Length: 218
Image (cartoon, rainbow, N blue to C red; front, side, top):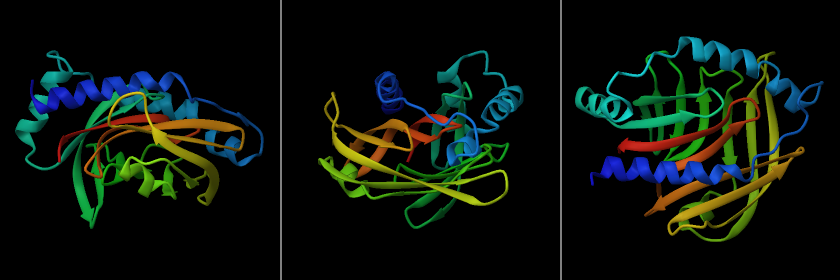
């Protein structure tokens, strides 16, 4: 079995863990969460309309073609609320920080696999500051705060802070980060290998929900 197929199977296993830990609050109104989620439905509908149809050969053929034509680092990102999966190529790097982008200039920013921000998706995550990062990479238990800063419709950042705990998941090599705050609970799942995170399911925010990230080529 190829390493790419193994990674895809691992991502499917992580996605299966997503049934627990999803929560929500402040669906509307003038609260920070209401401001952030205000146009989530419109964003999802617009992005679905723009999404290119999958190649006739299916996802594996799409991955194989992407690996063939692009020699650089690649990831596959499955956006659950948007209902689509896309292959993204690295377009920039600053130390451990990498920006992966689609041809439509939608981007994920990752630090060794940990989600740091998004661009071009609507009500983007400006930056995530995870006080739990050391525990996640070590596969250790611990607690810490997580601050998620979002771009709102007025162009200003809206920070949301969550209390999080980290511990081993139900499968070997999987680390679970459970967070709560502002009436929301969410759970991030990471497959950690030598401090790197090649496969994960991470919460972007109240509007965009979860993204499953698989490293196709490091």
